[in-house]
Amino acid sequence: MRSAHTVEQVRAAEADLMARLPEGTLMQRAATGLAVAISNFLGSTYGARVVLLIGSGDNGGDALYAGARLARRGAQVTAILLSDKAHQAGAEALHAAGGRLISPSDVEGLIQGADVVVDGIVGIGGRPGLRPDALAVVRLAERFGVPIVAVDTPSGVDVDTGETPEPHVNAALTVTFGTHKICHFIDPAATACGPVHLIDIGLDLPPAEVESLQTSDIRRLYPVPHGESDKYSRGVLGLMVGSTQYPGAAVIATSGALGGPVGMVRYVGPDAVAEAVRAAHPEIVAGNGRVQAWAVGSGLGDELDIPRIRELLDAEEPVVLDADGLKALDDSGDHVDVLATPHAGELARLLDVDRATVEAERLKHARLAAERYDVTVLLKGSTTVIASPDGQVRVNTNATPWLATAGAGDVLAGLCGSLLASGLTPLDAGSVGAYLHAAAANLASSAGPITAMSVAAALPEATRYLLGG
Ligand SMILES: NC(=O)C1=CN([C@@H]2O[C@H](COP(=O)(O)OP(=O)(O)OC[C@H]3O[C@@H](n4cnc5c(N)ncnc54)[C@H](OP(=O)(O)O)[C@@H]3O)[C@@H](O)[C@H]2O)[C@@H](O)CC1
Ligand SMILES: Nc1ncnc2c1ncn2[C@@H]1O[C@H](COP(=O)(O)OP(=O)(O)O)[C@@H](O)[C@H]1O
Ligand SMILES: [K+]
Image 1 (cartoon, rainbow, N blue to C red):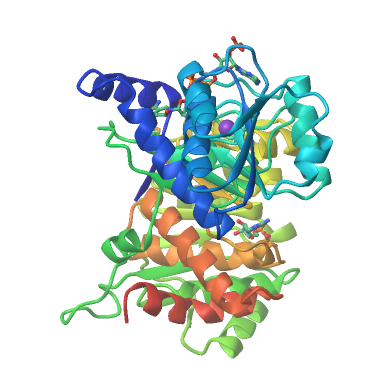
Image 2: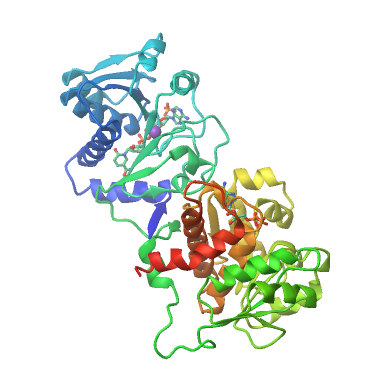
């Protein structure tokens, strides 16, 4: 599991550790890791032209000490001081190592000739946005295509929410310390981080605010059948998806479900659609029967039957509620065994806000809906946020943008239903489902176009690979 902590949690853990270590130890650990990461990023340090952007706090201190290390290994290091309060000991160390310290005027040529710009403007002490001097230098780096390595966080993003209401750095690499911060996991800030490299500095941290599953978690959580399993004990999923208007949704969601761990899939819907599903997937059983979970809502269109869906929501079996089915959700019931899977537009309707607001503040709105409707919310998009009504949050950041293709959401609904029917909780089903969905998309895509059906078809192989088979 990768963990992201809040600034407050990081500060508390830092204070606790600093009280037990000689002064400056943590910054030296951070700066050493940062210097190695920049060196690896550059490929070769000797003669490399490194420009440091230095703000008023310890984030700049990290950059200055790392710069001193790079200067001692032959890099030409120049620090642009964006504040007259720059970290003094760090500035002295850089000077002693042969680096230059300058003010932010007349730096166009310097930036143009740089191999890398290091963003030590602000880290966890920063407020969103960039001040004019910083913004001007960052824009120069963008104009000349010079890659930026961000220290701890890309300056200007909102560290605790992943929101980017103001101008910010877009990094080619972010080097962070101790633990991930929320901005590393949640878009739009996550995209501004680029790949994130974590340096261990020995912090002792409390449970994380936001988590992100890794392969080892998939192995731990995936319901693998054993010798005594049969198709019923593996779980039976009922699918109430697709319509005569959108028969494809039924076929696609069924593909997603069959690519998951479930032992059997029952399809409930119009005869003509059931025929289409059976033609594509002879394994399915058409008609009602006992199930361990339902996946409901994808592609129901005009044939949406809200009272019928409400019956399912009130019944004992857990439910994945997708697309049109989300219209059946009301905020009066106890729905803790429901996994709702809206995209930003659908979540916006549930919360009566506009889509852009949800996209800009994803964590906040996923949490808000989980609380208001008492469901686990899986908010789809470039990073997928899964928020449970008890306040737990997981994020999936693995997906390729090629996954933004019609029907991909139907695959996810079927897959999550399959995981739910196999006994996972809504939070586990949503987070394992999002991870496998992304893994299958990456496998099917290899950096090229994909269809929803090709994502579903890649699920077994992606799962086999992740389970170590
Ligand atoms: N915690 C840890 O475990 C470790 C932390 N470490 C490092 O310390 C970093 C945190 O350092 P920090 O606390 O000194 O804050 P930091 O981010 O440098 O900002 C400071 C000042 O910037 C200003 N400012 C605010 N917003 C701004 C803006 N938009 N644009 C421009 N300026 C802005 C504001 O001051 P003002 O100018 O308003 O007086 C604010 O007080 C952390 O990210 C990591 O790199 C590691 O060394 C070791 C382990
Ligand atoms: N930019 C993106 N990068 C990665 N994944 C994305 C991106 N945009 C959308 N996705 C994923 O693609 C799927 C689209 O689902 P959805 O919006 O329901 O589409 P549809 O209704 O056509 O099936 C979701 O799993 C979502 O997380
Ligand atoms: K930074």
